[in-house]
Image (cartoon, rainbow, N blue to C red; front, side):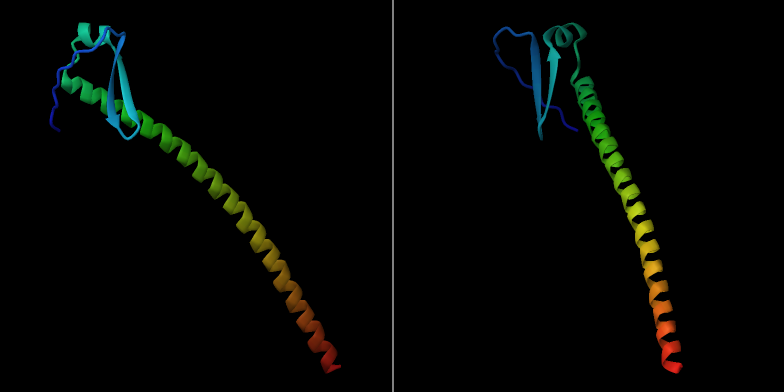
Length: 104
């Protein structure tokens, strides 16, 4: 991963924002940036951590949705099999009754 360095003249502000693209922006207080002297490597690690945390949250939500869908599908299939079995049993009984009546 390459580093990008830049200089800028900005008005006094309480924070510095880094736009990473893809709707991702990180905000650091100027105090944090200045006094801790966050190196570009630490910023990259922080950025990666923030992105990983956001991805994890999205994955947990998606996983819960999929669990709900699997549960609903399981209930549907159980009911479908039950209804289909009853229907086939009724058709078989009706067929047997019709054959018996025809033979008599």
